[in-house]
Image 1 (spheres, protein in one colour):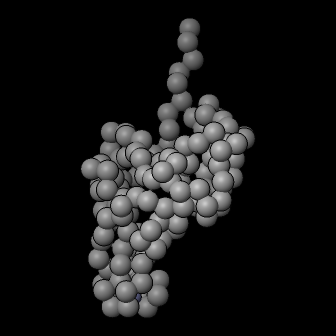
Image 2 (cartoon, helix red, strand yellow):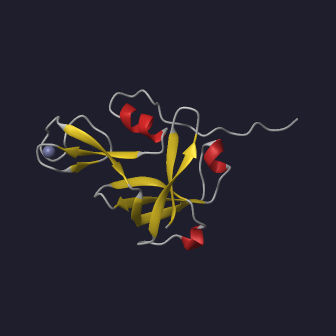
Length: 136
Ligand SMILES: [Zn+2]
């Protein structure tokens, strides 16, 4: 008897605020929002601008280039999928378009560094793709 391979928990693709974001990931587009009233960049996806509360937000696509703001090495996890991948690196990425996002950084833990230039890649699943960053 072989043990079942644990499956990655995935986001709900039909949550109202984030549905357009996850739909765009299927075509490997990393989207963010820009306020049409004050110009603030908004991320994660929301219904209102975090700067002025306007509901006029436009979706844009990021080029996927950024730098590591900070990171941590995950060395233990309670979920079987993530436990099967230990150790791995997760960090905050500063994207060139002006937003910061949390994502996995696909580097050996010893190679992770603040300021590391990274570029976007994708981990594909049936209904969504998960953004993962690699050294640029
Ligand atoms: Zn605004």
